Amino acid sequence: MKSEAAGYATPPDQLARLADLRRGVRKGRKIKRVLEEELGPAPWPGLRGLDLGCGPGAIAAYLAKLSGEFIGLDIDDAAIKAARRRFRYANLEFVCHSTARLPFDDGAFDVVVVNHVYEHVRDVETLFAEVYRVLKPTGLAYLAAAGKYEIFEPHYHLPFLSWLPRRAADAYLRATGREEKYDVNLWSYRKLLKLLAPFEVREYTAAVVRDPHKFAADDVVPRWRPLRHLTAFTTARIPAVAPTRIFVLRRRRDDK
Image (tube, rainbow, N blue to C red):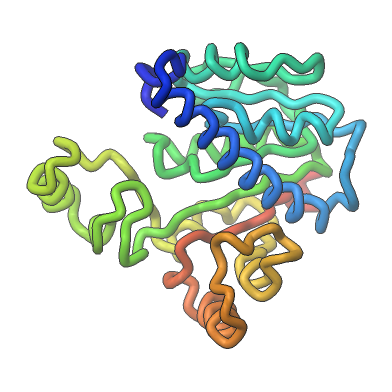
C-alpha cells in the first residue's frame, strides 16, 4: 500500500479503505479455514499470532477476533499508523519494523501468517529463518505464495512479466508506463520448496481448489465443477500452473 494513501482523507480514499477492509476480511476468512484444519475450530483463545507484512491491518484484525493476541508487523510506517487508527482492540498490536531480524523472542508465536509477502523481501532466506525462529516448537506458519511462472504476473497483471530476466522486465514495465523497475522477486515452485526445506511442509492448494466453499475460496476458484476438478488435478501434478500456492509450515519434530 502506498504511503500517501494510508490516511484515506478524500472520498476516493474512503472507497479504497472499504475495499481494503473487504479484501482483508475475505483473505482472513480463507486463512482461518486453513488454520482450522490444523488447529481445530476457531476461536483459539490461547493463541498468540503474528501477521508479517500486515499492510493496513485488516487480516490481523480479523484473526485477532479469534485469538488471544495478535500482532501485525510491516515496514510501511504510514500503513501501520492507519492500522492503529482503524483497529483498536485490546489484544491487537501493530509494529513498524524494517530490519531483517524480527523484534521478538525465540518461540514467541503459535501462528505466523506470511500472506503474499516473500516476493517483496530482499533477503527471503532470512525471512523464513526468522519465521522458523519465532515459532513455538508446536507452532505453524500459514504461507500463501505467488509463483514465477504465472501467465499474468499478479502485481502488474502483464503477461509473462515475471518470466523475464530483470533488465527485460524493467524495460517491459517502462514501455507500458507502469514503473521504472520491476522490484518483485517471484520464485519458481521448485526453488520455493528448497527454500522451505527446514520446515515440515503441508500443501493445501489442491484441497482449496477441490472444495472452495469449505475454504471460503469461491471468489477465486472456477465455479464450473468440471473446470474446478481439472484445475485441482493440474495444480496437484503441475505445481507451476497454480497462481497461488498455499502451505502450512511447521518446525521439524526433531528440532522441538
